[in-house]
Length: 247
Image (cartoon, rainbow, N blue to C red; front, side):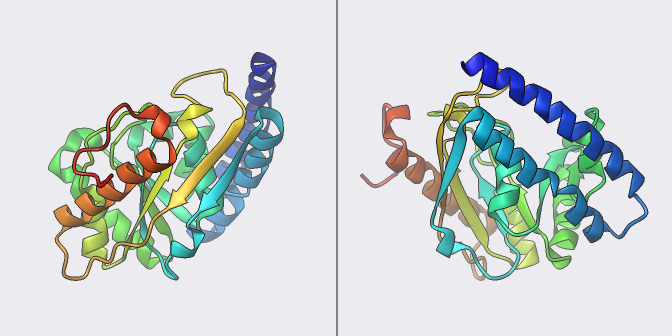
């Protein structure tokens, strides 16, 4: 059954995404925010398919923690699910992503047509400058910015090194950081064709204010909350408590 569901999903994903990508190319002349609104209408369609074909639903914890204005979201990254779902959960947003993603046929072409933050990860320190420069522009435009601080998808129960780029952007832009924990990787694993039904819990933490706090400390606070929340909500993935966490 999981194989059949996943196969149907793959077919529907292609049938929906390819026309949207071509549409995104055709509306290149429209203002950026108009393109963003039109192209991201793809999201609720895909979320409906994910729920009703794959059987993956979600529940939000801590929605009241969202600040009124734009913020930098520092999120756990386990699968492709959150790259779609966060666009439905939060106000209009964009992602920090690798330039290579924009070269992916159809999906990447659509991403290239909406305001985002595409960086050259091989540029070293210049990559951070790209995040800050482009990120401040997006925040001023009214978009939230999502950063996956671990840099890549990490399997459930694992923790990658939290890079400070998102915290530095928030500090320079003067906007709060919103930490997010979730368990999407339980049902949609990295590079896995077969997805499994279940409920993703998305926990939104209290906003971390940046005034008077150094970027490294902001990053540490976000990591501490996310990793403690992961262990609180999903203890079955962790054999030992997070270093420095309160039990």
